[in-house]
Image (cartoon, rainbow, N blue to C red; front, side, top):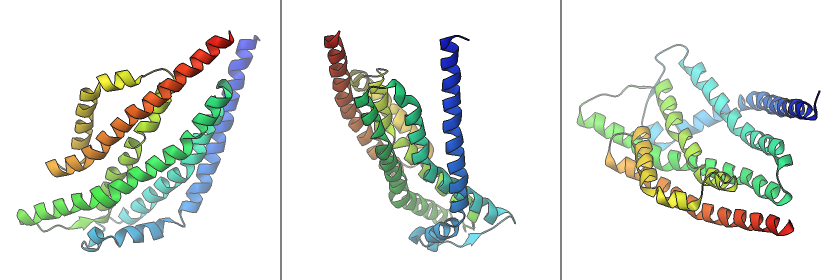
Length: 248
């Protein structure tokens, strides 16, 4: 067996070990989440927009379905730091010492942006969307009967994507470090990026201009911040390449 083959097997073994660690922690987090689901759901039901609604279960399985959905989401959020660290630990041997420190700092930044995204969606966007739907139903003379499954499924579908969308600066920083994108490319493609963000805003919000603007403003801000971050990361890449060239 050649050294290269040994290296491949060693990498696969390391990857397997990292995945097992993540799965074990996820199982522990899932068990712990069962103690958190009820307080979380009760807290969400106390929100102003939820207190005005009467929650109904249209199927016998609706409560357990919502219970398991929230348990799974809570477990995923609790597992996210471990998952990100294990990814970093897997790729870090191929990085320089300074790159290890920089990429390790991405983990708390990524978590902060994720929590910021879901907080914005829940405290700003979601109440507006609920009020919009209620006003529309009133204008059309429709008596709304809200199902608990539909309400919380809609909440998760609206809130969780913002946690992912708010990862844009971290993703841009990482791709810039890898040399896959540059700040010049991001600046040049600004108009296309804004068009894409507008499409995303139209998909995840009701079909009204105000809610789409509420989404577009933070997404546009994040894109501009990403360009600024990309410039900083790109300069560091150039300095690192110059330092390596001077050592040769």
